Length: 624
Image 1: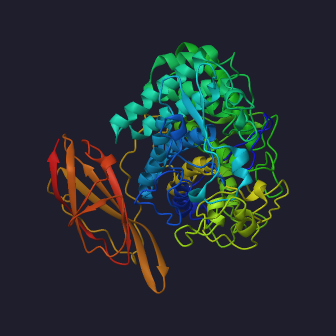
Image 2 (image 1 turned 90 degrees about the vertical axis):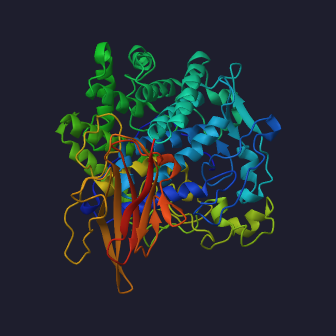
Image 3 (image 1 turned 90 degrees about the horizontal axis):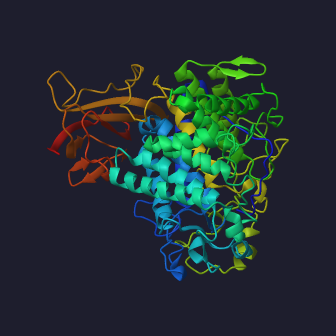
């Protein structure tokens, strides 16, 4: 990250459609988008790390301040941990799962997505050691940018910066409260103790943010050059209140939105952008959801004003408002030349969920140019994602390692320097610039899934490492994209997006061509009753080197009235990789975050091989 100042000017948004509607493999793009977060990890790299060229880094973070701040994410192409964009990243990843977790499960990526959230929230818990203390940055952007080093070689200052009652930061504390609250919803069913811990931190952080008001970059001044809080903190206070209401159903936070909507700008700002700094459009979208759910109560007049501003935002995206967003000749939303893609993905996500909210409430979008069907908003969002993936004048994918023509010289320290695992010799601060930064060749480590800054206002793009405005990636570019890609790859599935958050068992898919093997009944799925049912289906097939490969989705459902723990499955005739289960001896068990399996609930795992369905049966289980 080389400097990310933004101003409160025009804003953005986008959306999505099922895979069958386009030529892109949205499921593959989703998998790669999640993988990018593993490349951004700081701290001790776990055994199940899939990005093999990374290793441990930042192992003394926080030590000088007497606090453990090991872990978390590097924000972009540098080695600094900035709290504000990291918290926003976690909020948006969580929102993606909350809305489209079912589609992620069908793609076999829900576990990876939840793991990406937990890597971030584990760090945020460490960064909040006391109710009114929050560490908001580790490392210094100035000294970090003087060096070009792998995170494993860092020699730069790792000072930790905090906010407290004497040095407040309502925007930072508010966004972190939102992240904790949103993540608590993600883990509520599968890890209730962790969910409760996250919600406790969220309550404390909101109180801190609201009681001791001030801009965080007035307290952590070293952040001003990189993540200045231009919008102030009122939007984060409303944003945090909205997420706390959604997580707790506590009317205190609903009343906060109602009583402060006018005075804090929630009903006044007509936005055309949404991102790590400016949250108003996100607040307006969430409050519109509450209104559609019939939860406004006495606050209905105020909530309707939030709703009007949300619709202004959506109409501006599709060119049917009073003040529309700028677009490139190729049709991409354009907000600024520096990392423009962050606004594209964030806005697209809001458009996606808003379209689904409207569909669930059987409503229409009311624009100055007339009423618009929700499907038009979704189609627009899909066009933005398709542009990102390569449907653009340059035929360039702005996601690394997706398609054939993607950025090869990414502005990213870890990606551009040979892995420490293959070249253990120390790379010094300035040596990295001389040897690796200036090298006019492809990165030695492919930064799979990273979404770079993207083209300029005229669809032009230069794939050069020193072109940080266009070739630097960021975690907050990817976070909202997870939800959009899951929605595009998995479709709507016909469920009501306004109902309480749940990830129901996937519905059966349409019959496959006769050339594909039919999923055969497995023990527990046929006529005789079994408390555990198992259903398999083919979700995809493709040809490679003369062989036909099949992707199977297997759903295991606890049909009984009792919780089942330590469920073990026996799987035979499996000739390929499997995701979503943990092998234990000769059997397979559920991941720890899915064990036990409550009554009426389901888990899903997937596998790929070039054969008929594997034989899957229940080996054993215990009653809780």
